[in-house]
Length: 453
Image (cartoon, one colour):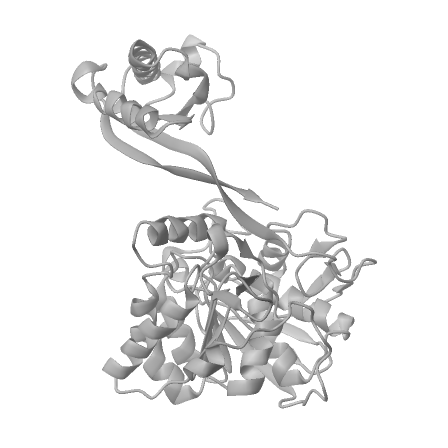
């Protein structure tokens, strides 16, 4: 995209599309990543196996990762996801060959910086690539009314959850090979190419509801196709190791009339079923009668799934909620809430729980010697005793004998950095000053941010 195009400023009010064109009867949209730590090779395999894909969406941004990028940026690092180079080196050649448009929110706090990085990658690969950017821009008056200052970096780290509209505009104006965004709601990343290709408008609420359903099902990647589902011994979820290894990322086939089928690559492992679809449908949903996205509020209570084959499921029943569109958008506003320090250490064998309890006692006592009163800001628990393996948290002797290995976790949220640093130092001292047999210590100290508005 030309630099002058980047300077365009648009009001946040969504206007109806003027004469939207139906470019396809069906559009095929794949999910290449469901979170920031997803597997690039799985995305490449989906591209290789499903030749119909018109779009591949890399959903790699969340509240945690956005806050991390802000931390990196204010420390002089990249405000965009540094892994974007690796993803693009791997996917761009085949995506360009197949004419598959890549859409990603890896731009995070600095999508324009990400655009420049991807241009460098494309040039090194000998590819001529068109890259559009959709992001939030703050405009503030400075001096005279005609003097405006524009900030492409989010003001104070604040970031609004944008909807599909800015991506649709990029597609309309540039027909790019790659679209890089700042924080766009997960389902909206997938909805945008449906709106563009199928000629939908912003008041086609029934179509938007079905399209957002498809986006919500796709957004977490392999969670729809058997990832996070396999459970040995459960006859409905007992996927073999080879089948689990060959999970296919999902894709969707969406038609002009709002018909939605989710699918996985033919012959791939994993499982796509009513159960996996239902599990993902309810993921991160508060009120199923009013699931809020920036584009439409949908009612998923009557959604049903109908297997068409072992690799394809028909999804019907999403509809606009009574309050069909949100009256405001969600913003993530970094607030300096102090410093977080946490540590973990493992103990195994005889009386491992009591040794973990001794370690907790020591760390708390050492902290109290240096900074009296901070213990109220420290939370402790024993993983494997206070949680999964125990039926109670008392000191019943027969229960403790059944526990063979545990991990002590201590978290502290402090007002000052020096408290968090001291906590980490005291926890590390368990190696030579604590009970026997501790190992695998892990420590982290970082700033803690909130909040959602």
